[in-house]
Amino acid sequence: MTSMELVGLNTKWYRYQNRLTQEQYANKTKFKMAYISVIETGNANLTCKNIDFIAKSFNIKPALLFSEETAKKAKKLPARVDMYKGTI
Image 1 (cartoon, rainbow, N blue to C red):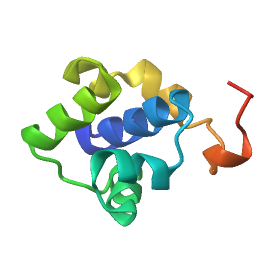
Image 2: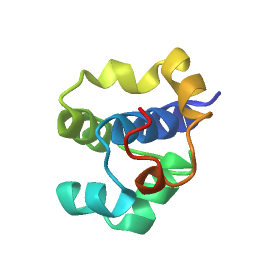
Image 3: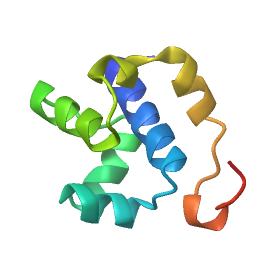
Image 4: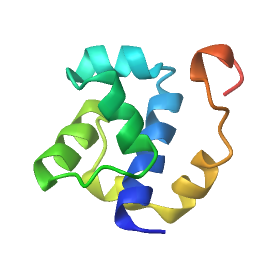
């Protein structure tokens, strides 16, 4: 996996663990919802500043956004987090 894919999948994982929809996460971070989608699909070439910002928004260390183990788990997540609340 590329770094962009790792960060994207891990962003999705932590968003899911916090039971946030993309819209809720966008409101929390002030990112546009479309940008959240681009990040999570691994198509955003993020700056270090944005990686730090995402990590801080989840209260985690930035290195965790590069975890292959978590990224593999994120690949198995449902497409819509709001439809699966309570299944975590």
